[in-house]
Image (cartoon, rainbow, N blue to C red; front, side, top):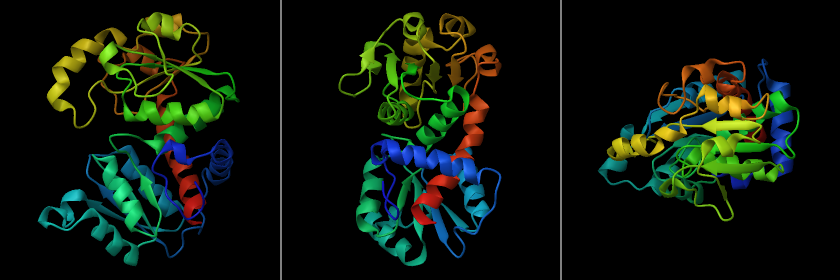
Length: 290
């Protein structure tokens, strides 16, 4: 990723750029600047959002910019306008586009058509902004990356899992995925351990997410039945290395993919992750636009 361009995937970030973003987040945390003074940022949401929408709006405000939030249904796409034409129009008004979409292909179309930066605020394939916040949180807790091991539990085809695993690999971290056969990640060379207790025994980080992603509601009953053995419980936490961090990007379904004891326990970094979305998104915006 270079200044002035897009952030569509964790693959767009090098190890050096990730470390630069973390340092920038440290400097911007709790501060207001005019880095985005007179800049307009359009935010488009095809999927529901709490943390992403609010954290980006606050981040833009803290940097002196103006956020314009649009629901996908407010656009003219339903009346026949193409994604590409929409992006070409928006670039005439705004300095960047932040978009949360069902299809990653729509982000790629926007980025190809527009000369302004396009930032992925979650797609069916990836969630790179969450990955940056997660790694920043791990850095706060563990003070290092090299040699750390992340155990992912649940639906390992998950977009958030994919982005974090890709970004973590750039920082010399290792990952193991614990899931049933039908939920394995589409990543070459991924380490698989179907037994969650075995997966976490050497883990420094235990990560889970919703068992039913947005867009998969028709498969809800099957997902819940298949993934029930992979719930992140207090027993799972006790099976991991001492001091292993418990992580979840939220929203969480307590008693489904994670129990309250694990989520609220001393090992939990869940709400730090949520806070760090703000600090790292300020860094991303400053890097791309400041």
